[in-house]
Length: 252
Image (cartoon, helix red, strand yellow):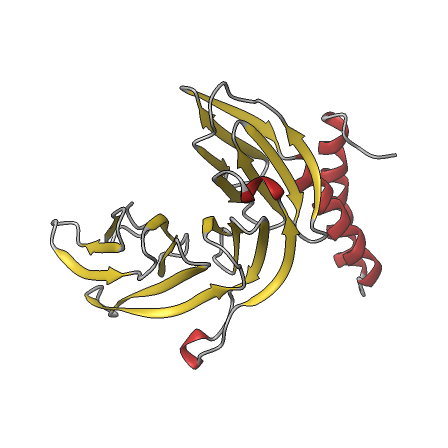
């Protein structure tokens, strides 16, 4: 996987090795995850972190440090997501890397606030824990919407969508592929969710995301202190309601 900023490439082996490379193919750093085996590894959208999960019940995150002139300096431990009681199947970052979500063989998913001062040893905050029993019996994949309002969980050939603020399941799409789903991803706007499997890619409207936007705007409107703010929030609320109406999903 290459970094969004184009400064380095990360590769992960099935053992406990993660390699950081420059674009000339030279190894900059070797990371030993100490997780018995690597199940999943990725680079954060903000281009600062690499992270991995494996046989252990945690997610480990490192910062890849570059100087002001773009020269590589070092890879240092940033923080860990601790709280699961069994191996972590998968994890994901929000678009701004301020939130992360993980799903474990213990049958739970967890939403984390990772906007912390990790250089001062501050740990991420657990925001929400939800149940996902399928995770205890089969591998899972997940995706977090760019605004971290919606979690998509895939097990087998089915997709489950959760409102992360309330921890409630809002949608379930069963047998959307003829084989196990191999990946999930929200588009950058958060309006759509894509899944792939059985040589096909399928696209879904993110209706829980529109509902979450409606809930958020209604709450902000109640606290708005000036007219210009109220008008802006009302416009955003109306847009979200219109989107739901066009999808036949507006609750009366």
